[in-house]
Amino acid sequence: MSNQKHQTKGEKAPKRKWLVAQARKEKNANIAKVRLRNYNCTPRKMRLIVDQVRGMEVFNALNVMKFTAKAGAPDVAKLIKAGIAAVEEKLGEKVDNGTHYISQVFVDAGRTLKRMQPAPQGRGHVIRKRACHVTLVIDSI
Image 1 (cartoon, rainbow, N blue to C red):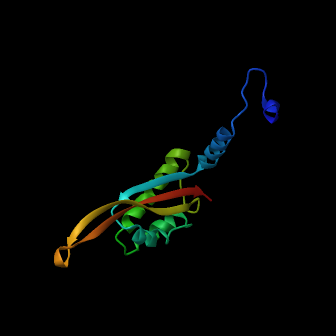
Image 2: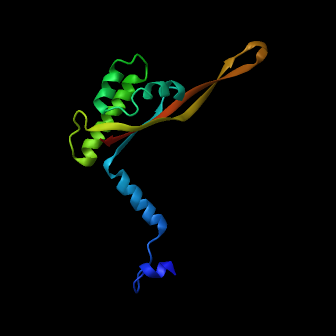
Image 3: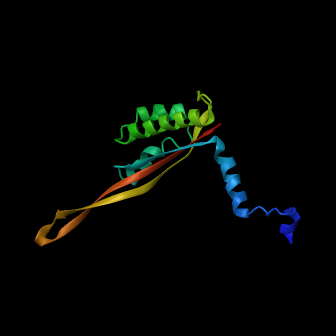
């Protein structure tokens, strides 16, 4: 009965799923999301790096990454630069100091390569070479 309210002759009622999708598109229209996939660093180590820049303004985050003495820091800085370029491409606006910040950054586990290392008495230990995915979301202030 509530669907009849929205219908006119020969027209279907809007689906709830469609409305949710439209709301999500409108919400994500002014953000840029970039990903670094299958980076050869364990997720635990990468989380130490990205926790330093979560919530920061993008140019301050670049300076922090410049002076971070971790192996993954240059690649996170590269990812931030890619995010800045994505904002400029998607929204057509120039990113200046104090205009955009890192609203979300998270690290997920990627693929795991399993290798065997010889162990005593004919056994073998499994060596797990882990990779990670880093997702970075930049939003305007």
